[in-house]
Amino acid sequence: MKKLMIYGASGYTGAMIARHAQEAGLQIIVAGRDGEKLAAMALKMDIAFRAFSLDDPDTIDSALEDIDVLINCAGPFMYTAKPLITAAIRQKVHYLDVAAELDSYQFAEIFDDVAVSAGVMLLPGCGGSVAMLGCLAAHAAAEIKNPARISLALHVTGTMSRGSAVSASENLSTECLLRRNGQLMQRESTELQNFDFGKGPQACFPVTLPDVITIWKATEIPDIETFVYLSGEGFPQGNLADLPDGPTAQERKGSRYQAVAEVMNADGDTLRMLLDTVNGYSFTALAAAEAGRRVLAGECRPGFHTPAGLFGKHFAETIADTRIVAFDDLH
Image (cartoon, rainbow, N blue to C red; front, side):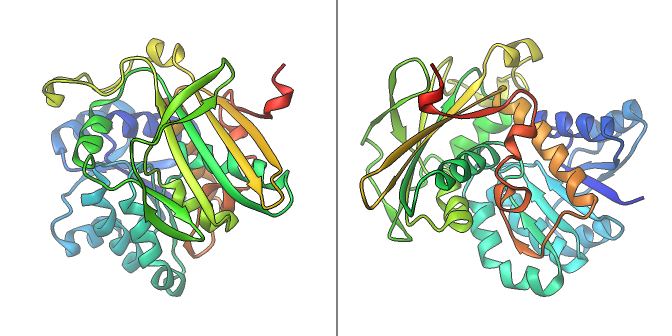
């Protein structure tokens, strides 16, 4: 039976992915840097574990020797993506992750040709906003002739996990980017734009979401902008190490996510579509486990791919309670 390794499995999101993957009947091995936590987790779940750091390539190679698919859940991904991607290519292991940071996607672009030659797939963003927004963008792009520009806004609600907060804090200095004429360019992070998530317009601020890379790859729409609207508690204050692991199941249940895509063509035609789904952490865990299952079952292509490009534009709608609708169909 093929094996799925979940690296960073003792973290908040990794642990949820591991549970969903086990419930799906997959043979999983939990891995990461904290041997004590992993041992306790493996004992409770009656599965194998491997504790290893990412400092030594030979150590990583040895740990991946009998693995078929790897899901990286260990942020900040600016430190973990490159060593795991390069090891996965050497060991011919398909690489997936749940990164919300740009680094994984930039490394996937850099190593695309090498991965193709090795017959290895690189699928960063197999869960989370990249899967959500990628499917939403694909739906919208299919409904308008010759799409030339797309703006995407994600409504993030509820509390952040400790890991997400740490990753976000280490990426605060990252420049704010958009795509114009196919090229990534800097933009002002103060240029707010209104988007309607179904209850009236909300002022959203521009951010660099990985979709400026993945949607370009999947659709070749030359102009792409990404925005976020935060409701609920927003970014946590104080010592991030003191935060709880993440929101409780009840808190997630009460904090659904939405996203809007506004796509335009050269004739000035505009189409708006809305995605409504479960809490982002719940979606990420379910989508990543499902992506792992599908890749293990043979749904893969060598090189850098996106979830919407690989699994199709309906992938997000197969995850829990997710719907994508044209804005005119809301009422």
